[in-house]
Image 1 (cartoon, one colour):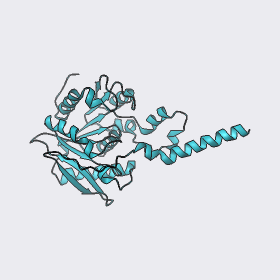
Image 2 (tube, helix red, strand yellow):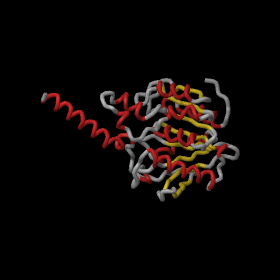
Image 3 (cartoon, one colour):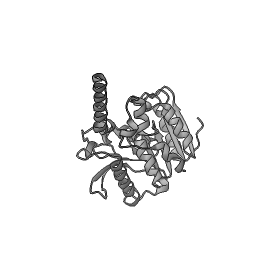
Length: 267
């Protein structure tokens, strides 16, 4: 009886730690706060309805070209995105990246699913109304954690196309695979329920996933590509979660750029 009680108490303690510390795991925010430096790019500050300051990196699109609105992964900040911004700039695409609360230049704030959505939507409203980029020229793009933000923004009516890079079906789905011995579906606060939202989003969607992704299994990307009414799947052979733009970077960028421009590309 004593052994059973000890095991029960230990299990309860682990569940409590998982619940209390879950946002530290989901949002391991870099707090360097470096300012992105890139020729031709500008930094934008937007005041969200909450009063928070939202930082964004903007590389204007060439005349008639779309703007890619990028939502980054959970271990990045804006300054890390300069090489990606250059890649899409060279491909003839505008680039607009939004910082999350608690990250980088916004490190004094606290991240949560609701706050990421609120700040991202504030930045998008500024892109539309302040910078004059119409919705039909906006391509939403989310990578890893950012796939949850991009999907929600598409659900709210922003953007004309959607790109999901290394996306998950939901945070509880990922957690359940990582910690199958815990009742994570009862513990998770921030759902980012991409699969549940997918059938309601009729925009053209491109799902990009590395075949050797060890963090978010490729079958999640495959499941999402089947759940969206108008989606295609692009697999980066041999790519892992954090080297997708290294293993097959030029091909991935070219495929996304062609999709953003509405061009058909085989394979």
